[in-house]
Length: 185
Image (cartoon, rainbow, N blue to C red; front, side, top):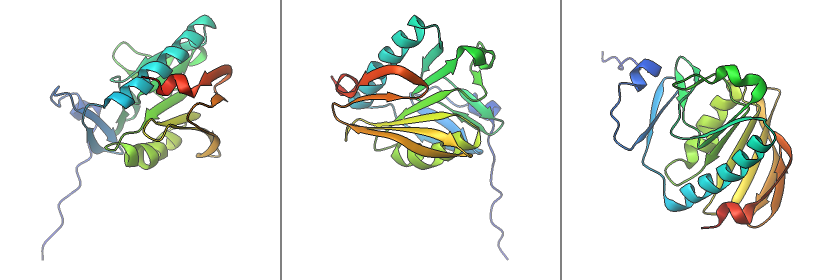
C-alpha cells in the first residue's frame, strides 16, 4: 500500500535560506507562495497610494508606512510581504530592525493576475486569523478599491469604490484618497 508524502511545513528560518532571485516568497500556514516581480499598473498603484499614506501618517505622527519587500512575521509558519503596511505609533514595538513581528494595523494588497487568488482568499484569511484590523485590496486593472474591517474574527467589506471616486477608510478617517490619483500613471 502506497503512503502519501508527508506535508512539509516551512518556517521563517526556511524562508531566509531561499535565493534572492526577484521572486517574492511568502509562507502562509507553512505553505510556500512564489510570485514574479509585479507589473507597471501594480507598481503605479503601490507607489501612489504609499505616497498619499506616508505623507498623511508623517504629518500627523500616526506611525510608520512600509512597502514590500518587507517581511511581516505573523507566526512561526506565516511570513508575508504585503504591498503596503501601516503600523500605528502605539504598536511600534512590533517593528524590529529586520522585519515586523506581529499584526500591523493595516495591510494593503494590490492584485495582479498572478496574486489575485492568494490576495483575495489565502492571505485574507491569514490576515483575519492573525488579527490585522484593516485590510485594503486594490485591483488596478479594474480600478476597484475595497476596504475591509475585522469584525468578530472575519473581514467585512466596509467600502467599495471604483475609478476616480474619492474615499475615506479606517484606520485613517480624516484622510480622503482620490482613486484617480492612485491609478494615475
